[in-house]
Image 1 (cartoon, rainbow, N blue to C red):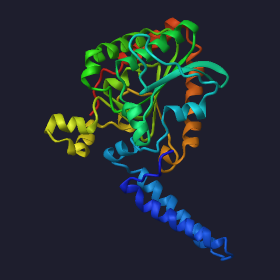
Image 2: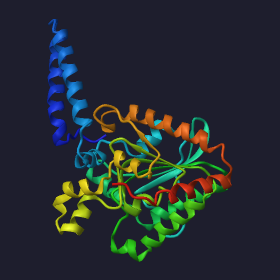
Image 3: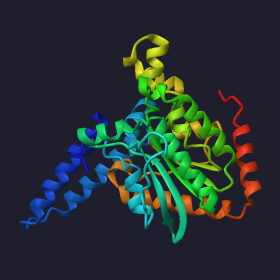
Image 4: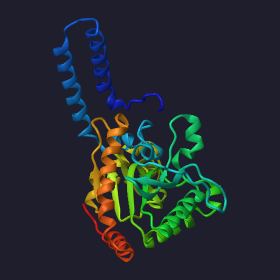
Length: 318
């Protein structure tokens, strides 16, 4: 876990929490200040709830990118067992921005795939800041086809600012790799559950997000482009990300109104970065419930369900 990092709007809560810790330390020395501690703890909880129930879209984007937020490998550790990571696309190389492999979910064999970011500088570079190259998407597709062959449900975790836009990635067919994943996932004859856990950025997210059920954590975002990228295109000024976020409406509350996602998973007070375990428990329950429903469908019904789901998204909401 990286050193604790706090967003600007979180700092008033953090300061109060420090005071609670100081009072608890004094109480250990025999001082009877339990009533003062209780009152301050109640104030902390009230302030935290007020802040996180009234986040702006830009603040939600900041929470979605929080460096202490759980990433795919954290969820794999907390939700699954017997995970075996598989590497490489059998064509060019291994992309560390996407991880995946077979695992067990509540005793059932499944295929888990997801974007992986880093926390410190070394890990961020190793994971390419969670931005996959074409070989990452081809690796993901290889694992999905393997899952289809062996009748394994596919569970994906989406958390990327977008596909890597470098020259090498374009030369190796970034657009083709994403497009192929969209086509193949649409026709995959096994259940697919998608979990948007942080940033869902552009085609880089969608390339592993064509599912029968799409779940989204409360403080995550999902959009065709990052707020900063949108601002750079519209106003030639990437610093206007806050203004762009309001226009994009990328939050879970916005996206569910469009019918793009099926369910919002509530996060613990203060966000997923404050309690990985509680977040994982809530996500596991939602995955389990949706998987039970999907496993009752035949392969043909699963493909038809996915087709109807994405066709139904073609509507506008003010």
